[in-house]
Structure formats: structure tokens, C-alpha cells
Amino acid sequence: MPIDCPMPIANLTRDEFIERDDLVMKCAYATQNNLGILCEEQVYENELADRLRAAGIKDVMTQVPLRVAHGPFSKEYRLDLVANDAVYELKTVEHFTPAHDAQVFNYAMCLGIRCIKLLNFSDTKVKGKLRLAPLTAAQRHACNISTSGWQPLSPQCQLLKEQLANLVDDLGGFLEASLYQEALSFILPAPETRLIVTSNGIPLGTHPLPMLTDHIAFHVSAYTDYIGHRRPHLQRLLATLPLKCLHWINFNHHDITLTTLIK
Image 1 (cartoon, rainbow, N blue to C red):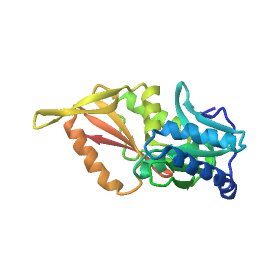
Image 2 (cartoon, rainbow, N blue to C red):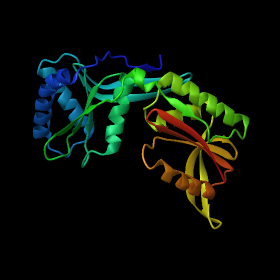
Image 3 (cartoon, helix red, strand yellow):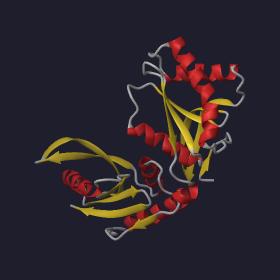
Image 4 (tube, one colour):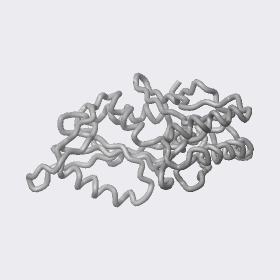
């Protein structure tokens, strides 16, 4: 199956999650009171799990594997804490960022669950942030791929289009962009290569991209706003690289576009 977790996790309603969360937060506060705010994430994870077991919760597991597969490609994530079907992602950061939201949404939608919570132990008091996944599995698969701006410049370009369609059909949309890029890079295959960035003939450094051919690469993104402003920046990047063209795949909610940018 495309997505597999060895620990069955029930899809809790918001009320069911909050009911379980009351004890988890009490144990989280006690954990921080005991350890302070300067420990590493794993330390809080282990003590919180121990406290929950001591409080009578039998189904407590840490670092639960979550495997996403497509054909021969597979990627494994790790769920920090699962307690009586409630899933938590622990952090030791200054503050939560949109990247943390994206991470837990990715986990929740892979698992097909509605509720997942972020916990930050580095704040002066443990901060929790309950996130509600916006879509069901069926809704995630109702995606449309537009290729009106795409040009097949080599047989590998055609394979990119076909494998993108297969990947979306298998996994659906709305997962993290890096997952789709890694899967496509592996399946095609299109190895990631660090290309030399030059300006006015001067090498400035390198930039990594999956290469379809010696002079054709692709890039996967998940821009949902100001999309028209993104293309000029990709075009500028392309101008600095030893490429003929760049295929740009963008996941914008249900709309997926495959666009060819030519130098």
C-alpha cells in the first residue's frame, strides 16, 4: 500500500482528541517543570512518554515509523509521540513556523487523521498548537494536472509527465513538495546534481536540481499564492545555470501545473 504505519491510529474527532489531550498536557507541563527548557527534543519525548505510561496510558509509543511508497520508491517519516491514538510532534524551538504546520499536516494527511498537535518545550511554558487536517483522503485525490504550458523536449520529458500523473494517482495531492520531488527523482531516474551558478561568467556557487538529461532539470514546489511572481525568479535562476530548460511542477491545492521554462 502507498502509505503504511505499523501502529493502527484511529481518526479521532476534535472532542475525542481534546479529551485525551488533557492528560498529555498535564504530563508535558510536569516534564518541563522537571527538566527546564534547555534539553534536546528526545529528552522531553522520552520523559513525557514515561509519565504517560505511569499515568495509566498503555498505548504510548515514540518514533513511530510512517512509510510512504510509490513503486520501488519509499520514504520513512517518524511520529514523535502517539498516545492513545493522539499524535504529537515535539519541538524545541524559539517559536512555531509555517514549516512546522506543513510538517504535521503532511503527517496527518498521510495517516488519514483529522487532528494532530505540535508541542514546544523551549518556550517559558510548554506551548501546544492543535492542527486540523483540512482534507480527507478522497478529497486529496481530486486533483487536476494542467500541462498547457509544458513542452516535451526529450523522451525523458514525456516520462516526467507520465510519472507525475502516476504519482498523483497513487498518493494524491497536498503532501510535502519534497516528497514528490524525491519520488520522481528516484523513479525516472533523475539524480539530484549540484549545478554551478554563474553570473557574468563568474562562478558563485552551486544549486541542486534533479536532472532529466545533461541540460534539462525539474523542480517541484507547492506555492499557493503570488504564483505569477514566482516564475520570473525561476527564470532568473535558470539563466545562471548550465541548462537549456527547467520543468516546473507546482502543487497549488487541487491544481497541479507542469510548466516548461526555456533559457
